[in-house]
Image: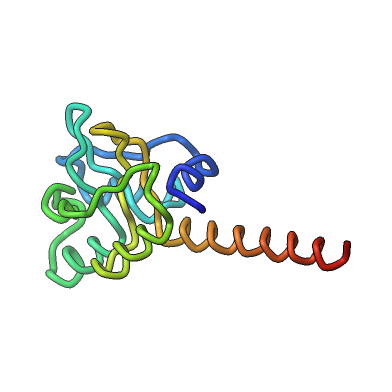
Length: 142
């Protein structure tokens, strides 16, 4: 069974984050530079929320705000479900589907250890299916 720890082991272990008072424009620059769709929002080593491209589109652009003057704290997502490295990939898919979200913060007890995206989940499923197909093919040909 694939779990969150399997996904995290394949990802860059760095946490990409900004502080709550960071202007949205700067956070977007960091996201573009790192080629990611979200950044963690952390203050005094404490998780505050997550800023996503969707937050930007819905809470800045559509509301006529300016990304240079709007702090991340005004638009970040704060109510995301938390998962642990032991959680199954199926559980993650269910949370993402039910809550209509694309990112989940991962906590080991109370410590933030990463973020997984819907793309991470899809890649893990595809990889697992490819391995299963290879094993079945080997079995059939042996």
